[in-house]
Image 1 (cartoon, rainbow, N blue to C red):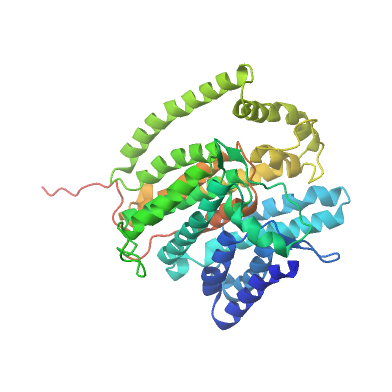
Image 2 (image 1 turned 60 degrees about the vertical axis):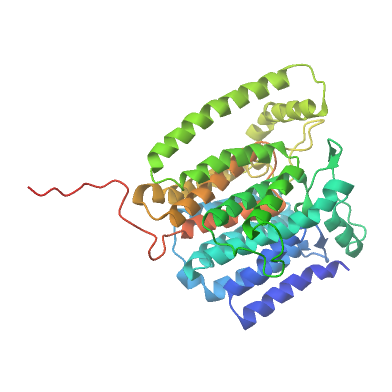
Length: 442
């Protein structure tokens, strides 16, 4: 019954016909994005493989174009976005792999272009920031509760549910066992990807908690001994720990101090303090990793670290031969290193220097937009949220040096890029600039 992937798309189309792209985004796209695995697909003849994500994104993208594109404000990030989409399919097209190129273009538009448009057009303009954050965090809370089964039993409950609908589809995504427990992956395919997603959720949960945007208690469980915000934040934190994903943990430790800068009244002073604390830790971590990988291999963890270190040096000659647009999906493999656990290297191989350049420029544009609160000031809700998005992006970019960007984190990255471009202070959220001259009368 692989055709069940079409059900979310049909629901999204119904929501668009009856309400608006904003409600379809909130009520259909976000639950599908965070609750359903993306790697189950329905393949028919010459059509591209269609999963839950593509089936939902396609009607949502059409709805945005028909109803909200008039609000579009063109910016430099749109150019980099177009360049990134072009680089995703150009190499395969140039090599004569027309079908592969078409499928890659379709997937990139659905998984990158539509989230980018949704982030740019559907949230801030309609004052849906708080509702969107609460919906996202609560969905992660649900995933965290379900995923506790995987940690204890070593089997993914999402796989147990959906495998029966997709007979014959075999995946490499199996629950890994570390320290005697299953590494939680949930609907996100792999524990490293789950760690990236739950790091994102934790930062948002901390924002909602600090701004006191949750109700004091669960309406249907007021007898619980802790507040709603503590329970939700605690479940998300423990699920992040249950992924046992050290790369995302490091990214989260990097992201949290950046986000907390937004809480301070003295942005520059706090930024300098965070830099002075984080920079030595980052240098020390790098030196420790180099020392760890240079010695004799005595554990699986050390072997994994050595593997990732050797990836770049072994594949750089391949990257150089690939040129500006890379090799496409069929790039030459180095013997014994078929898994590319580094997104920047993977992009350089498949999309060339152009793809890496476009990704970095998109991130740079986002950071430029998100530093406006440091210049223009604003109340804490605006500052803190801007720095929260900046911290999430910074942590994500750091983590990508140890893992590929795929499945839901891929969509998340472009949703955040689009959201950052639309982030503007709402009414009452801007005060005088942080630096100003005082008028003195004589």
